Image 1 (cartoon, rainbow, N blue to C red):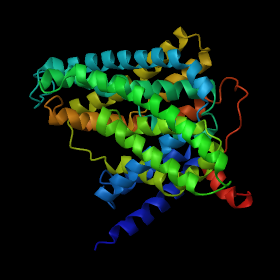
Image 2: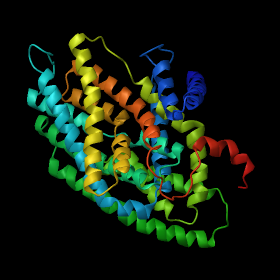
Image 3: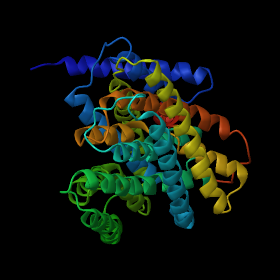
Image 4: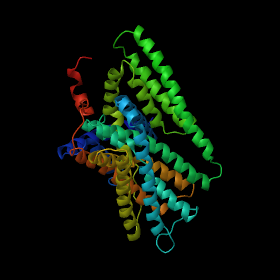
Length: 415
């Protein structure tokens, strides 16, 4: 049996913590350090580690638990209140990047400028690059907002709600484009599955809440079986979302967290899941993003395209989501926060890009620019979020602790 995964984990945990502390000393969120650790350890820089099946599985579990915790920490009343606004923000945050990505690729993806080896028509290829830019990696923003103690603010709830809806709209957009390239994909079936998931989540939420409420009344206090059952529920919801409805597993985990947030043991469960997330799962997840990065050789034209792609990716999300927030009567400082909070593309864009290459919608020459865009938007989002949240008043919301602060002081609290 190969035990190298133990050393891999030790290196990842040590490096993410050290770089996390280093970034905190220069007034940046620790998640930036974790992302940089994966980038430095991976094939893009020193090549000390490479992504393995084990790391991929632990990373996937990490993002599931992260979104489960985000669901438990979400102010449900505020999320309901911002539901319509989140949809408008997400819609604008999809349409503007889609148009920006299409326009940029239309200028470069043509004979004599950049030669693409994709099988699909140039029109579909250009639309697909726009689809890549519509993605939002909610996990990066969630971790940063938790670290800053801003997840329960009005801006934080809008970012969270819009990012969840953004994923759904992204799935629909991806389905439409892939159905044009692959006749076996049915748009109607996908839309019915997405609708079915929300019905499923609502029904399961009511049933689980009533059962859990009844069970707690007859159970002893402080038993760890609550943690086990909550985790099982999270994993089952994640599996059902991905396997039966074609919705991202993290969306299922988030809704599981929302359901648990209504129960009597929500705070008890939140503390214990925050611990395991901070201790193991989150560092591996954020490091794994950097480990995915493999930069190919690029000529000057591709480098210029890469720079412009990053600029378009950042600007279109800020303008699109900020404009959507303004339409919904958010204040100017809140619009800026929401726009910045939606910048990160993360692993979502990489998954979409890989799907496009498999279907002949994305040329291999464009993979390098997409990777660069993903890395830079993922790193810059936590930095900009910290800067932008310094400006403007804070709403009177319950004060949150950082995950790291909680873990360090956990021994001082009564369990």
